[in-house]
Length: 194
Figure (cartoon, rainbow, N blue to C red):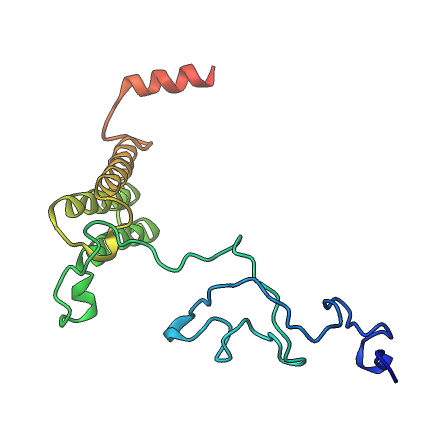
């Protein structure tokens, strides 16, 4: 039978498998790829060490993976993103700044949705804005605020403060019967609509 193999095993009579290198006894050299680790320290792709399904049927070498689409394994913790309480405290206590902001904003949303009294939409919207303003103050004053820290301290303070101030301002100016009159804003609106 010479150098050819039978067509039943997927190879031609030239002694080469489809897509394989030359039919020699020398091993082929694959480019080196760093192994990546999955969760719990296992190599990515499963306990076998390679990508899932790699070499499962033929036992041959796996194709080299592209590093073009690599995944981010870790990101730097934002400044002040540590626990707000000690590690032996219960989980809610470690994240009290975030919980305070979320509970205040949730109370505002419930007030707007339920509408238990006149002007409830205005009070509820102001509660949401006050929650964001409180988040800005906490981010400035408290050294470690847990998951309330999203970006750098300066960016968080500006973002929370600006959004909170705009929501409170819009709640005060909401129609009908606004609590705050700003004639220059009416001129801006009329100039923009014309």
